[in-house]
Image (tube, rainbow, N blue to C red; front, top):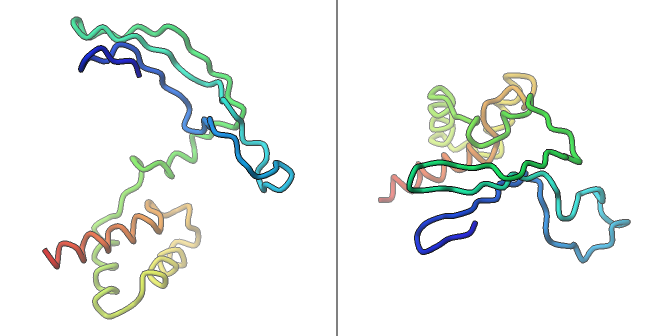
Length: 136
């Protein structure tokens, strides 16, 4: 991102799997040695603020990993804890069931963790927020 004062002039949008650092661990010791360095998929954009216009200069769509739109549910904007799940978590928390036992019970109910609309971290964050709100 290039700025001129408070105004953004240029923007670089890259794939979320871009990696710019080089690991100190030998690639032969890594479990996933094929992770790219200086990943090439990106979009260069110039922003004209006065007329609200974005000009796309360059688009590079060479992905070295499979792009899988059917796995989009793992993205944060697609995850949601329903009201039913919230109440179940709160009730289990009240009677003293630990979070490490609550999440597997949801997985057992739907037979597969891919069917849930949330991950374990979302549930733990919800519990933490509820506890914080109680003490405020």
